[in-house]
Length: 94
Image (cartoon, rainbow, N blue to C red; front, side, top):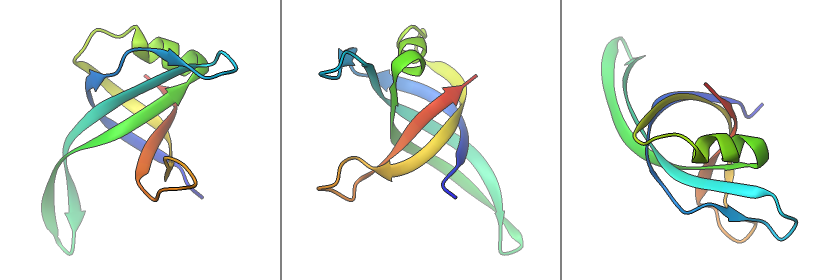
């Protein structure tokens, strides 16, 4: 199963664009800061990752005032068949 829930702050977004079929696309950067338990200790995490969304979710994300704190739901997948560069695909957020 490929399911992801990640909280963070959307710190950057590209201009809104549309697929050839007219579906809105959101592309941006999410910054995450947190801690996880690992091997009996606490590990501090700080990273940025590329995120993408389509349709209604993209329109909602595009309308946020940045920086915007969110909890994302989605999955991880390569950007395209020609690359193994991973993106977080957002299916919902609050």
